[in-house]
Image (cartoon, rainbow, N blue to C red; front, side, top):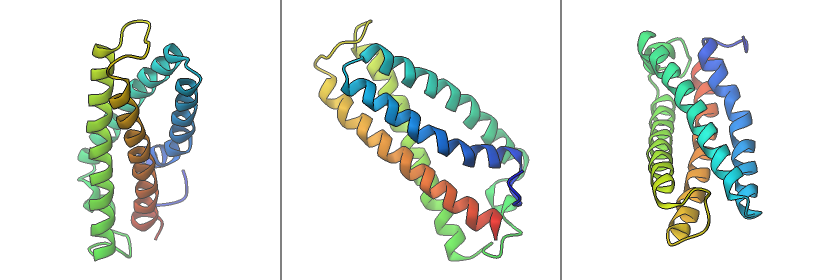
Length: 152
């Protein structure tokens, strides 16, 4: 529906980066305001929504033959630009997924309910910022890959 060769789910995933980053920024601000319960709620809901969306997207990718099949009609198919775009995006998305899942699991285990600062707070802040940067890079590289793979 975006007017490219991307299928419906590809278009949805690309558009989702337009709301993921602002939601992460909102979550970050709630933590800065010391509203840890709201911060936790936002992160858990966002993780659940993204788990469903990414799972459906991955199933779609596999049923469609994978990214190389889906981008075969791009003028950049088989070029170093396309291959590097895919590789960099994959690296960013895998690092984001692993770090975010690990941080959520550790945070749910190490913070009391309701959450308050504790011994894990310093590591949580570091990995939380890492995850936000990684998610932003995943979005940027995903949009770049979408343009290279489906718009041209």
